[in-house]
Structure formats: C-alpha cells, structure tokens
Image (cartoon, rainbow, N blue to C red; front, top):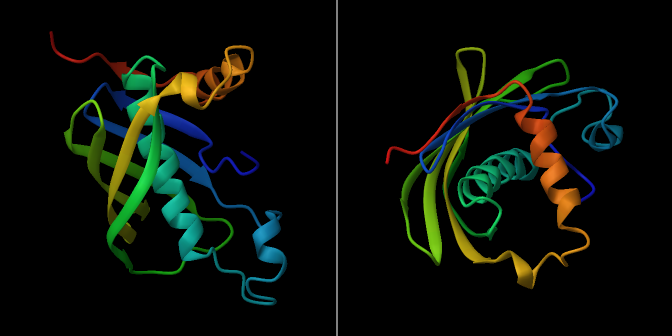
Length: 157
C-alpha cells in the first residue's frame, strides 16, 4: 500500500477497540491540488483512515491469520473540514464479528471536535490468499511500527 495514514496506534483492546493518531501535514501529496490555496483532506481519505484502523484491529486481534477487506461504508457523515496541522484521533469499536465478517463503528476527532463518523463492514479472509509467505513480514513490520508504545489490552479469557 502506498499510503499509510496511521502514524501510531495508541491503544488496542483485542477484539474490541482501537485508537490511533494521524498527523495531517501540508507536505502530503493530496494537498497539491485539493484545494489550491485552501488545503482540505478529502473525505475518501478520512474513510481510508478509519479503514486502516479497522483493518489493524481485526488483523492484529486475529494474530495476522486474517486479512480484513473493507466491503461496506455506511452512514458516513463528514461534520467538519480537516486541514494541515490537525491531529486526527481515529477510533474504531467492534460491534459484531465472526470468522467471515466484522462490523464496527468509527469516529475521527480533532481535539474535542467530531469531524467524521461511519459504520464499516469488513470481509475476513485467510491471509494466505493475499500475502505470500515471503512478504508477510512486511505487513507485520508495519503493524509492529504502529504498535510501538501502544497500550495493548488482551481479550478476556
């Protein structure tokens, strides 16, 4: 993936919830023409932030044995503009899930201001279908970086 929108995962509650951070910088490619003189982060990229957080929650919780694929974005609401210099607090909360799919609610805040929320549905597939064994370490290295210094709360037994 060319664009990784999460800078850090702050908290991961296995099979439950994830909180991540994204620092929005003027130097990002998207601001070259969105919009000249008035840079605004596109709504599609806000959805991608939520999708990456949701994917991380599901894949790490499954010990990298599942690949999460976003299949439905529902009830997405964009409530405020996101501009360079903003720090996004991205949160996803698992509502339901089984071996084949999962549904979660996600929010993005800048400080106390809610800028976006949506309900996301993911299909869950076997990682062997998507990542050859020789390249799987690359994906896990991204998660390892994101999870540095994160508070990780295991699932109750």
